[in-house]
Each structure stands twice: as C-alpha cells, then as structure tokens.
Amino acid sequence: MTKIIRFTSFMKRSYPLKNYILGSFFLFIIFVLTGYLLADLNYELAGKYLEKIIEEFKHLIRPDPYQQFLVIFFHNAAVSFLMIITFFFFGLSALVSLFSNGIILGIIINIFHEKIGLLAVTVLLAPHGIIELPAFFISTAVGLRLGIQFAKSLSPNHSFKGEFLFAMRMFLKIILPMFLAAAFIESFITPLIFETLR
Image (tube, rainbow, N blue to C red; front, side):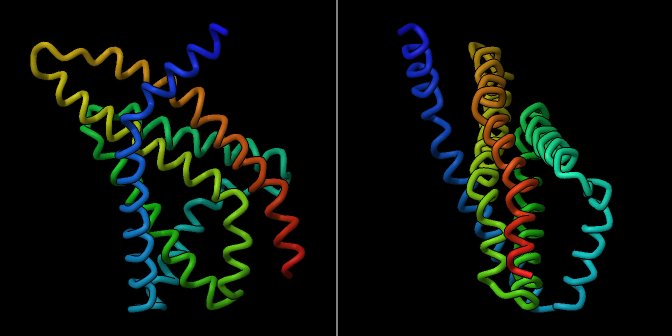
C-alpha cells in the first residue's frame, strides 16, 4: 500500500512535466520536417551529411546483438543523462539535442523513403521508436524544466535540491527502463524485420 501511495505521489509530481513533454514533441516534429525539407532542397548535400553522421556513429555498430543492445542502451542513457545534468546551461543542451536529432531523423526519412519506401522506413523505425522517442521527449522535458528551475534558484527563496532529486528519480524510474526496452527491440527485433523486408 505504501508503494502505491509513493507511486501516486510521484506521478502527481510528474504532472508539471506535461507541458514540457508536449512542447518537446511539437518542436521535434518541426525539426524533423525541417530536416526533411532541407534534404528535398539539396538531396546530394543531405546524402553527404548523412554519410558523415553514419561514419561518426559507426563505432556504435556491433555484429553481436547482445553487444549492440548494451551499446544502444548506454549511448541513449548517456545522452539523456547529459541533457539533464547540464542544467546549468538553463536547458540549452536539451534543446540542441532535440534540434540535432530532429534534423537527422528528417534527413534519414527523406533519403531512405526514396530507396526502400516510406512503409519500410516506418516499419523499421516504429517498433523501437514508439518507446525510444517518448523517453527522449521526457528526457528533454526534464532537462528543460531543471534548467528553468536552476535559473529560478539563483534568486532568493527558491529551493533547487528537490527539483534535482525529482529529475534523478525520473531518469532512474521512467527514462532508463524505457530506453532499456527500446534498445532490446532495436537490437533483437528490428534486424529480424529488416531481414524480412530484404
């Protein structure tokens, strides 16, 4: 019973994040569309940019699915943690991450839908994306809120400790389990879907 009460209290505390999560979602959609349109304007340049991105992240690709699972999980967890822990930039790092990931995803969708079709792109991205993206939006929301609360704490009579502890609980109890599930799907299920589509 005590655990239920604690969970209920935790979820009530999480409610103020709603607007931040919605804001992150809508900004992300705008950035994805921007990336898509930029790729339309200069397909060749977008292709070269994507090749550069793939080259930079090539070290994250592992042939063994168990290793790939760990690499994806720890990479996403580290990016999320950095968005939260760099609150002293007043949430700017979270916005930068939102922008860059949105632009890259928009370019990926544009280029690969030309090569394998939009349905295939959706089938490949959706299984893990339906978990990974919400976790990313929550991470961004927590980072933005913490940055704003840190700015407020610079004035008298505003405590920051409670906000920071709440952000850490969100990271450990909500964000990490979601990234864990998404990494499992991306490492073990998405490859099977890819083989089916080939």
